[in-house]
Image (tube, rainbow, N blue to C red):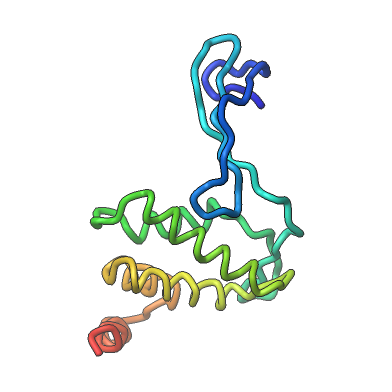
Length: 149
C-alpha cells in the first residue's frame, strides 16, 4: 500500500478490525519511511454495477459521483461528512442487495431522494430540483407540497 504522505510503498498494518458497517475491514497502517499513520478500508470486490442512463447509455457505477451529488445537495446544511458517508453506504447496500448487474439511473435517483428526505429536507428538495429537472416554480411548489404532507 502506497503512503498518501510520501508516496513510498513500504507500509505495514498496525491494527485490523471490522469497520462499523461490518461489510469491510478497517486497517491502520504506518509508513516505514516517514512514520505517518493512515487508515485504509478493504472491501470484497464485486461485479461492476452498470448505471443505465436516461438515453440508454451505460456507465460504470462510481461511488464518488454519488457522494459528490449528495455533498452538493447538503452544501451549507447541518449535515456532516459522516452522515453523508453513512447515507451513501446505505444506498450502496440497498443497490447491491438487489443482486442486479444494472440499475436505471431513475431508480438510483429515487433511492437517493428517499435517503435525503430522512437526512435533510432542504437537501432533498435541492437534489429533487436537479434530478427531476424542475422547469418552473409551480413544479417546485408541487414537490414542496408533497413534502409538507
